[in-house]
Structures are given as C-alpha cells and as structure tokens.
Image (cartoon, rainbow, N blue to C red; front, side):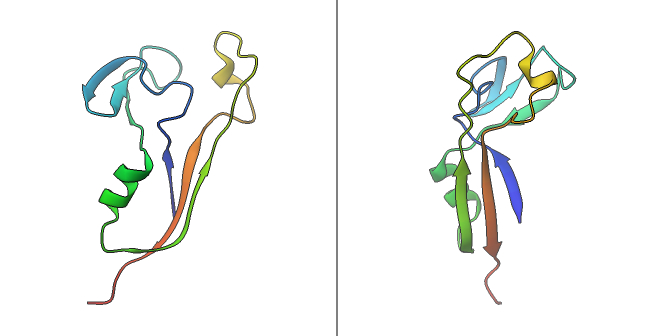
Amino acid sequence: MVTLKSDKADLAGQGVEIEPGTFVHDIGDESGVPHHYFNEAGIRDLFAGWEFLVLAEQVITHLERPDRFWEYTPFPFTNWGIVAKKPAE
C-alpha cells in the first residue's frame, strides 16, 4: 500500500523543476524538499508488472485557498492511493 502525490495537487508544477514531474518548493515546512507528482501513466510505468488491487485518485479541490493554507487544512493533498501485488517469481 502506498500513497503518491497527484499531478492535480495544488502545488504541482510550482517551484523549481529538477526533473520531469519533480519540483522543489521554497515555501512551507518542506521548503527545499523535492516532491514528485504522478499522473496515471507514471504510476502504471512505476508499477509495471504488478497487479493493482486498488488504484484510486483522491482529488481535493480547494475552492478558496488563502496563503499558506497547507499549514492548517485537514484536507491537504490530492493523492493516488495504491494497493498493488507484486507478481510471483
């Protein structure tokens, strides 16, 4: 089971892109930390050969988003939820 950030997340595409889909933000507690944002194709590539038991994208749309909203919102992330089974060898 794993959760990964979606490319639909509020901070996706913001900051300095250090490789495709990976950004370093200069705000918040994780300033300077790289974050990779996945689309469905990227997840399927990453888990090629695995069997998905659950592949779900939970999209959070902030209709109003004050500055630094991520510091206090109980709904901070648009994520992928994944439960996958590694193939038998």
